[in-house]
Figure 1 (tube, rainbow, N blue to C red):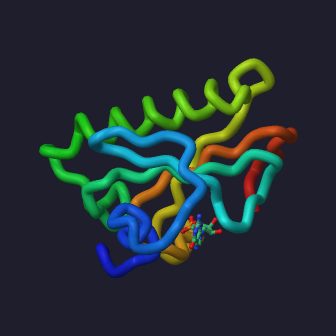
Figure 2: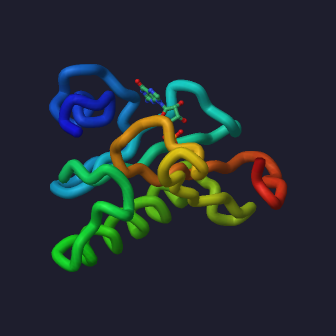
Length: 114
Ligand code: 5GP
């Protein structure tokens, strides 16, 4: 997974517009935003998706979700609302094989998603 785009971003091998980073997670703007604000939140530990997370990763999953809400506040999405989503596998629409949460906001989100 370190060979995926996001693994390379964690390693500093390719650039990203970082909005938040700590020892465990990183958040950066999506290169092809699907909303006025579209940020991806990833663990620094390479996991393919939430399916790849084991019992040892429970705290990390919590940190990921917490970082996503932190980013939403930082980017002023909290009052109007926003969406956090993670795509898993082929039917889930996952295109990058490295666990990431999408944080989308700045417009009304429809339901069900496409
Ligand atoms: P997925 O389809 O796997 O749920 O989401 C992958 C996301 O990664 C897409 O929204 C896509 O636009 C974004 N993405 C793909 N390549 C890059 C890149 O090199 N940099 C950044 N910042 N985002 C990327």
